[in-house]
Length: 428
Image 1 (cartoon, helix red, strand yellow):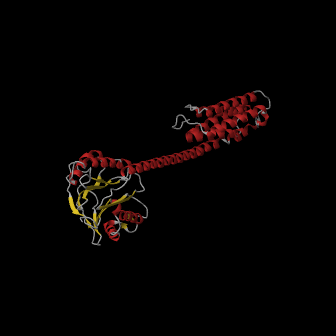
Image 2: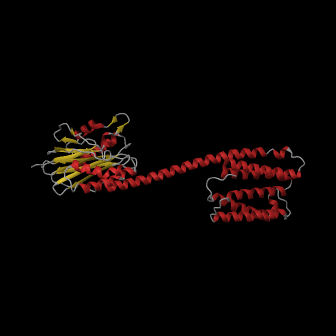
Image 3: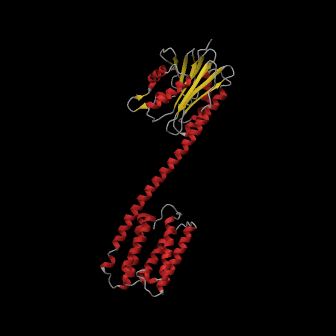
């Protein structure tokens, strides 16, 4: 018989139960041989057979209980079962025809353990033994004695196919459970990474009000990142970035960006130089298929002057409390990790009193509705105008909540918003 790919099958609870049941049945037959049909009442060869069966099943049960995993365990068990069944048939009287059913059990066990080919081999062995035993007492084999033989082979084929289908479904279910467990582990790891990246709080400034809001997608590996850092010279550095790809591998590049940025910004004042240095430092770690879009800038607390550099990121929006149309600053260089020696430009503008700057990731404008399509920049600008009088934090939360409602909570991408709003006291 051909064994299954597993060479040391773990004993199953049902096997242990069957072994102990057969042991108890053997003891009963040993005490009263005539109680089982087909056994002669004389305590000679029948008693020896039953005693052998009892010892065999006790040994089998102990092996199961001790988790015995011999390579040929199941083959030996089936062979022993067939030998004992054939012995029982040989010493039985005229009722031996009724004992043929025990061969069905042997074939069925072979089908469960060794599938179609193993069951067919067992059916062939059982048929040969049946013919040999019955033929020894008969000059010619009556049709009634050989009539059950085809059913053995039919049971072998059907039982083997059912067993193969069952095992296939079991493997699929197990693979699905493993994938779900792995996915849940990755989600947990992704959330832990996201907690490490997200700033615990935003700086509190006299002339600048900060607000941020974000939400992760329903997939693993959130790729959004935002941060703010108060510099020693009275400026505030801010950054919003998005790494391409929804995976732990992609998300793991964001801590590199966070700490590389904090190292570079201490020595450089020009945002274009900072971004160029970050591209140089991170380029090798992003190869061959990752890149990071990023908007980095610094704002002077007293004057509201903003100097920023865009590396392939969506355009920030400046809005006005008086209801004037928002302005997009669309100039951008290549994303980090695409061009090793990329050159970047610094853009400069002012966020005056009662003005604000909205920096966000593409999960905002690329949010999809099954009917309305993309959320888009036009909807975002309209929403900003509607909430122009809100605090920075309230505006950021309103944008994320609106996008979430627009997508009907499908959350196909992360969404992050950072709002920098000048207070009335700015410049006074």
